[in-house]
Image 1: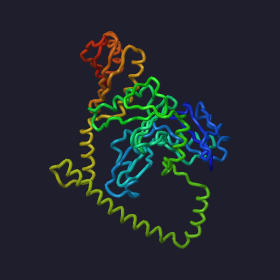
Image 2: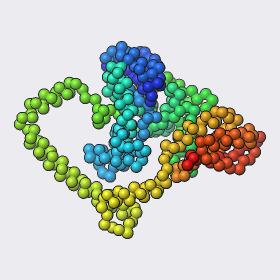
Image 3: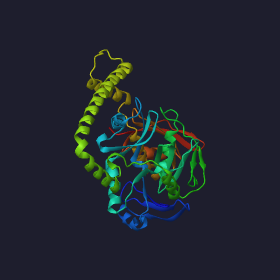
Image 4: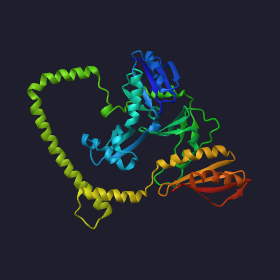
Length: 405
C-alpha cells in the first residue's frame, strides 16, 4: 500500500491526537489534522479506508532499558527479562509489558510499558474500528545519527532520540531543568550531552550543544521515520494474529492432530522438562558463584533462595532506598513556585539519589525573592538555604530541597 495512516496517541484520553496520511510514492502529505480527544478517533475510520495504520505511542509512558544476558540469547533467557529488570523498576513486573526492540550479541534493548496503557490504547482504536498492527515509541521515529541526538517539539513536549533504541520525552517547560541535571558531571553514571540537532525552531532557547537543523513538521518527520521503522511493541500477548493465518493453522491442526498429537506432546514435554532442569541447575550454580565472588560470604553453602534474599538486601543497602523517578516528580512540583517568582533564575540543578535531595543553585534580583521562594517551597518540602552572596547586581545562593518525612 503506497499510503499509510500514522496516528500519534496521547497518554490520557483528554489529550490531543495528531494524525497524518503519508504517500510513500509521492513522498508528501495527503491529509493531516488534530483530534481533541481519544473519543474522536472514530472520525479517522473514513480516513483509514483500507490503509495500513501505524500508532505512535508517547514515550513518556515507556521506560527504555538495556540488559546484558549471561549467554547467547534464547527463548528462555528472553522470557526471564522481566525478572532481570525487576530491581530497576518501581512497578510490579506482573503489571508491565516487556517488548524486545533489538538484540546485538548478548545485549538486549527492551521497552517497558504498563499493561494498563497498552490496553487503553487498544481500546481506543478498537472503539473507533481502527485496525493497527504496529505500535512504535514516538521518539524512535526521529532520525538517528551517531554524531548527535535528534530533537523535535510536538504538542508541548520535546521528543529526543539518543540511540537506536533509547530516547527522552520531556515537557517543554521542564527541558532546561532536565538537561541541566543530565549535564552535571558529578552525578555517577551520567555522560555529558552530545550535540543535539533540533528540527523545531529553537527561538529564544539558550541551550548548550544544541544546533538548529532543518525545520520540519513534527508529524511529517515522525511519519517518515515510522514507515521505515521495524520496531513494534505488539509482542507477546499483544501480537497481532491475522484471521487468514488463524484459519490456516486450524486446518493444518485438524489434518495432523489424529496421527501426531499425542507423540509430539509427549516428546516435547520430555525434552522441555529435561532442558529446564539443566538450565535451572546451571542458573542456580551461576547465581551462587556470582554471590560468592561479589560479596565473599563466610558461609559458603548457600541455597538459591537464601542467596536471592541476601543479594536483595545488599542491593537495597547500595541503592540507599533511592528512586530516580523522584527527581522528575520533584521538578514538576517546583515549577509552579518558579512561575510565581519570575525574579529568580536557576543556574544549576543537582540530585543526590542516595539521600533524595535536590540542590538548586539560582540567582535572584534581591534577597527577598530567595525568602519568598523558600517560604513557598516549605509547604511541600524541607528546605535548607545556603549562604547568599551578591554579584553583579544579583543575589546568588543555593537551596537543598527534600521531601517532607
